[in-house]
Amino acid sequence: MISTKTTLAGIHFDNCLMNAAGVYCYDASELNQIQNSMAGTFVTKTGTVTPRTGNQVPRYRATHLGSINSMGLPNKGLQYYMDYISQQQKAVPHKTYFQSIAGFNLAEDEYLLAQIQASDFTGVVELNLSCPNVPGKPQIGYDFETVEKILTRVFEVYRGPLGIKLPPYFDIVHFDQMATILNQFPLAFVNSVNSIGNGLIIDSLSERVTIKPKHGFGGIGGDYLKPTALANVHAFYQRLKPSIQIIGTGGIKSGQDAFEHILCGASMVQVGTALHAEGPQIFARLTAELKTIMYQKGYTTLTDFRGKLNYLD
Ligand code: DOR
Image 1 (cartoon, rainbow, N blue to C red):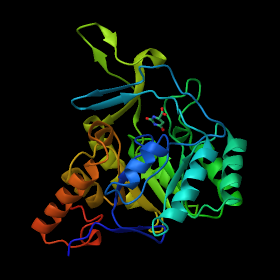
Image 2 (image 1 turned 45 degrees about the vertical axis):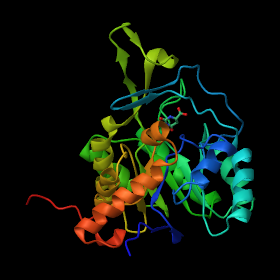
Image 3 (image 1 turned 30 degrees about the horizontal axis):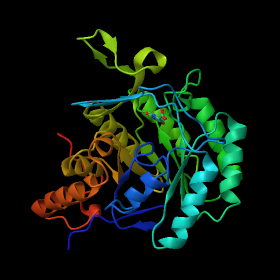
Image 4 (image 1 turned 90 degrees about the vertical axis):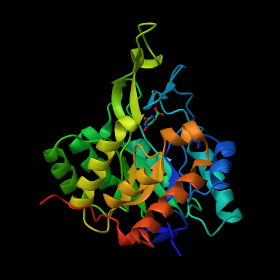
């Protein structure tokens, strides 16, 4: 029997495929659709201390090669998602869920984690250190000192399984430096990658940008992102201690894309742009395609090929 099940932070998931934070996870209606799909679990929209309306629309555009977004973290606030997860934990107790969070400073991170710690939450926390779209707020993941400071405090206050969502890096020295920092901490996982921050997709016919916030600058996802995502997944897979697993995100729209992420070292794979385009039924298609590839190659479990990327020397 070919299986796409996986284990992350010691927790079993029936399928390695799930949504990426931000897509089909804004409210109960969207999260229910992921719950009712073939996805192994869901991650919520990144929850902040208080609800946010986000940036002005239009703030998301799809192209035939991917997407640009400058949503600006619209979300219903951490408590909403905690309440939803609490219900799901009771209704579907054999599954484990991911709560994405982001504070706008260390005190907010501490506050969010204290709320989760004090609740009945039994899931996994994904701390978003990489949102490119809040005007005036830099992507934390590019400030290495701040990442170290945040993680030091995070693990003083929070005891449950927790991982971080990172921005893409583009330099070998940055992979080395970030991995050295991350290896100091009991992280459950690193999720690589968030969108490529502050790209520009323009329309030559109208000679205009395609989204309104920040004069059109926004996070790039989809096909544009896949080679960068694979590089980040594999670079961290090579450098992180084995207890820090990798979630691969970026450019997954076929079973082959998911296969490649796992080959590069991912234990779980998240789908953003393609999920936005195709809807939650994409998980059935991706799972079937991934299983077909595994069948053709003679693999029965993800561990048969995870991280086993070959080199030319
Ligand atoms: O591309 C992104 N868009 N990444 C994030 O982390 C947040 C999201 C948004 O809300 O802007």
